[in-house]
View 1 (cartoon, one colour):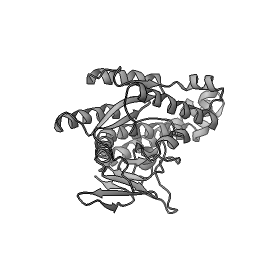
View 2 (cartoon, rainbow, N blue to C red):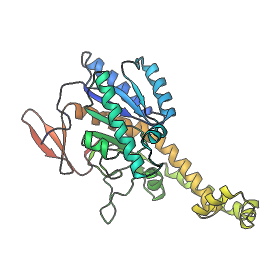
View 3 (spheres, rainbow, N blue to C red):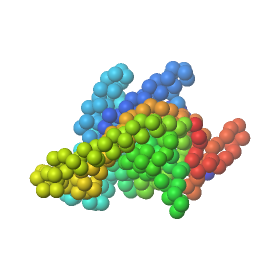
View 4 (cartoon, helix red, strand yellow):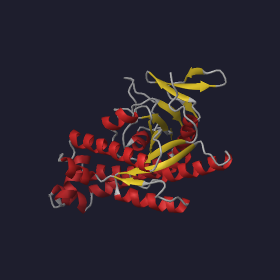
Length: 320
């Protein structure tokens, strides 16, 4: 059994992001602290940055400038899905289109690694909104990690993970959970299905505020039922786009309730980034760089020196 990484420090990482890239910003700060504490050699180093979005590229440029990092030395790689689609002739949304994009990503990443003289020891997904497909997994399988804003070790009666996907925080709040946590996991073909390396400390959900939002939703339900919105909806006088949205969510009352609760979930998740995601991700990168974590047969092991001992970790990995 081999560690996820067993090379010399710094471990060289490519960070993937699509939006604000604030997690990448925090990882760069952690790298800087590690460099300062280890005589100028950090335990891990973010050597390049990959994004599929124009917004992501702009945010990465701002972040690198703020950190005093020259993008000529640590490149920002933006791969436009539309351009890849045009080049490959694939159709939007198909499996072929998604696989072709990741195949092109592998090619571009290898080219940049060669031209800028760095290795890709690990890929860290940090707010990257595309599913990772076979070309990337075949090339760097077992060395791609992701953060997810839920306890992936929390299972339902059938043994499936309860809170996966984009709405994990919203789903946990609506299910009545009193706290959330974040998980750092190895990426596999399934959605949020890989072995869990680290589960963060919990963040309490503001239950009183949740009740306040739900009470407000009850008031809105009553107002909508007696106002023009419901009357217009019943008479089909609402624009078709709005009607389609209402219809898919169960009518105007349910739609507005969902909108308010999603806003509450978004606020909670933003705080969760700082309290849960950042410390867990930094801990995961540090431990991997030190050669302290291994994965085999979908299980995670802690490697303890001086005598190399492999201790199987609980299903939820290391608990912070």
